[in-house]
Image (cartoon, rainbow, N blue to C red; front, side, top):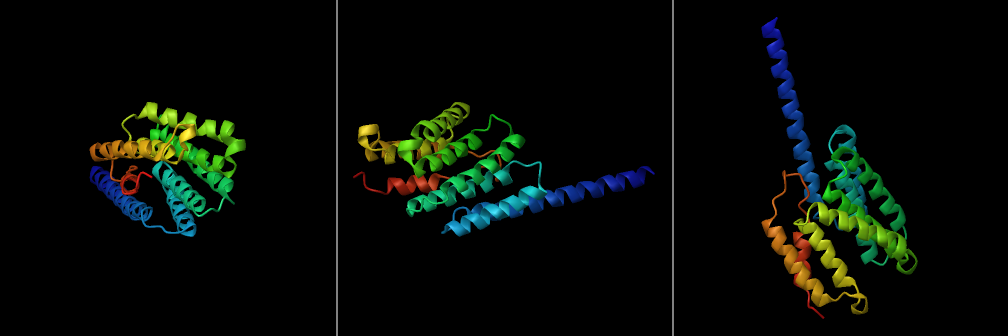
Length: 216
């Protein structure tokens, strides 16, 4: 009987280890695609992929986190292309996934609060004049929480630099100030070590891209 139980336990452990390895493999492949997607449709497909992974791995916060990140990247691409239609819906999808991620990871996760900030910024950009006091305030609040939870987080530094870079000088921003902040973000990226190979590690390429741009 003891031999049977031992064999069963070893078999269960082997299956669990195999399932974990399979999860890490597929997540690694999908996370890599966040750097290569070119269109809004690509990011939507990727968000759907992460959603399916999350439905199978319902105890893990990273699949819904990356589903939200994919939605936000989709929205940012739409915005850069001048397509403001659908930003509310895209931000709403991101918030849905972030709620799932936060339920699993807890309220003290800086990475989740940073994405909440980015989702709120997408909503604000639909009509900045009308939404600055609502979605803009929400974005500021979430950024403050993320920075307080993890002041050395390079993604927090990156998004703060972007905000300053794109804010007109009469409102306290400038490209020159933004570029200095991108330099600080790169320094933080160089010192940053993610907790695991699957944890958020995006943003350095974007910071370096901005540093390659002229200040004027």
